[in-house]
Amino acid sequence: MKKTIGAQLSLGFALIILVTVGIISLASNLLITREFESYVAKQQREVSDALASGLSSQYDGETGGWNVDYIHGLGMYALNDGYILKVYGADGQTVWDAENHDMEYCHNVMQEIEERMEKAGKSGDFITHAYSLSAGGEPIGRAEISYYSPYYFDDDAFTFVGSLNRILLVTGALAVAAAVCVGILFARSISRPIERVTEIADEIANGNYGARDDGPAGTRELRELRDSINHMAEQIARQEEMRRQLTSDVAHELRTPLANVSAQLEVILEGVFEPTPQRLSGVYEEVARLSELVAELEKLQKVENDRLERSEFDLYEEAASAAATFEAEMNKRGISCDVSGNPTAVYADRNKIRQVILNLISNAVKYSRGGAVAVSVRDDGENALLSVKDEGIGIPERERALIFERFYRTDKSRNRKTGGAGIGLAIVKAIVKAHGGEITVESAEDVGSTFTVILPKRNKEEKGEPTWNSRPS
Ligand code: ADP
Image (cartoon, rainbow, N blue to C red; front, side):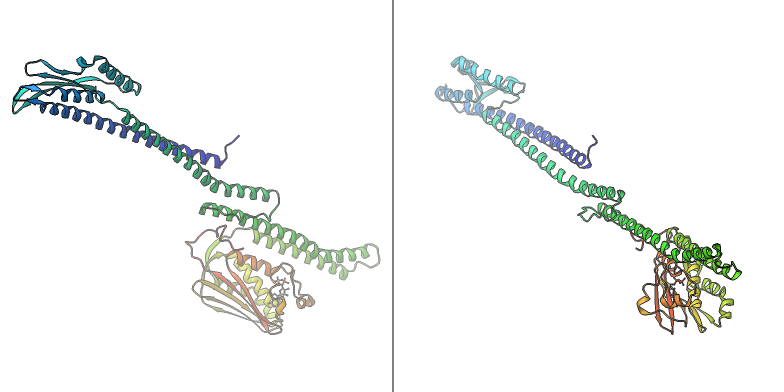
């Protein structure tokens, strides 16, 4: 079975801490023990020296004798601590010798020290320091002091080293336990959001587009991952909704004209009516309208799916040239046209922006009864503004927000049978939105309408499409 990210992180974390604590414990143990050993060795040398200098004061210069009682006391006391004392007079005669005094006890002490140190894994041996003893500058004899070298531990020292090791062990174990707990929590804070995002992605894959993750994310990267998945779910849900809506809209839009065509053809085929050119041309017109509707739908679908192909161009020039294509029709219908403004450079998809201008002017012409159509282009620094103003039938207030929907036509325009499929403004809105822009409409019934497109100018350096997150919804 593959390890989970949480388990892997916890394990890695615990391992790092284990190695770190291990190294620190080992190093500090070694260092402290070594320091302690050299301290003990120095201490023992100092005790030995102090013993030797203490002996000199036990010589009585006047009588030439030694205070043997005191030396005996000192010697026995030293023996208990592991120092074997031998004192000789100036004539070489033994004054006091621990081994002579109590050989068995002496050997017991030495053996005990050796065994204890061996057990602790410390090697060493008994060494002897020789001291010349003098009083008032006169030599009075010599002393030999033997002890276990380089050092030996008494009970207290062993207790100290033992406690030290225990403390290091307990601290190390506590640190590892704490690190494992923190590691598990830390790993969980990373793995949980990833698991949740995976669950959401699975749900989306299974068709539940409403699935969203709104749990805590911990880090910026995880938050971005969560937001991206949520955003993706929203986009897919919207696409799905659009697809469903489109299918029902198309079915609805096609039903009536198709029913008309089939009814007319039926009566002709049944011989009820003659197939006169007039009748046939009626059928043909319906079919032509259906073809136009399909063509418009294809255009809309292309706009919604295609990437923008941006280039730098002059919006004013584009508006003037688009307006020029309507000259003949405007003349025919007694509409005057005015294009005003200044050269305004934009970085956008030229063909698609041209489509926007054409659709707006086409509507202005379609829904006008004479009067003027004014196209103007402005630059407010950040945005390029294009407006198309007419003196036509106007749009009732309650319908203003709806005219950008696919297939929507106002009652008035339906009655006028102007022939539109109700897709032109949906295409306009989709293009403007893809550019990160906005479209607004002001209108008064029987006075006229003004459509204004606000297009972020963007410069050439800001190439590339808006990112997934900043894409307008
Ligand atoms: P259509 O092909 O019907 O013109 P559009 O999407 O371009 O479709 O427009 C949708 C509806 O908005 C039109 O049917 C019309 O009712 C209304 N409309 C659009 N432009 C104007 C305008 N300049 N003046 C009045 N009504 C308009």
